[in-house]
Length: 238
Image (cartoon, rainbow, N blue to C red):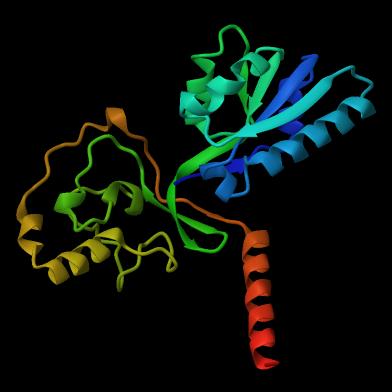
């Protein structure tokens, strides 16, 4: 899934304050799971923008709506006529959705309400971990299904650096060494010999740089922990 975080209301306000008629357009798939861009978040942003406009004495109409996805036309085409009634669309989809809608809506600008972070998995409720960098040249068949581009802090292609220590990365004891994980996994699969094949110099033009990132949403984790405690209490009272 694509993970993102909502832009601050100050940043959003500075983007939209000069428009008269704004629609906050929510996306109910990926970024909704990370509580950044779903219908509820779109409604909240719209409310905050109306309050800000009132405080600053600006005449601005701010509405909100949402669809399942911004990255597939079958979802937003049915509401396209409504979208075109506004001066600005503030999309709470990921960057893909903003790009996709911008290409199809004509002269109406589409602005992002979300900072797109990475492709990740749900490691635990409210905690997301980067597993794929979308580099455009997947080599997971050579590395035991573990991505060195996203999960190695140096994106090394031919084994670990000299900083690995007991399975951890030199940047911090809480970060796993991706190549330690790769070697252990390939031992398990019986494919360790594949690592003898030296990978050529990589073409990074389809990728990005940087180490693995995480987003931890404490309010989701706190909610899940609270629900778990309620369940335990209910079970103990039976």
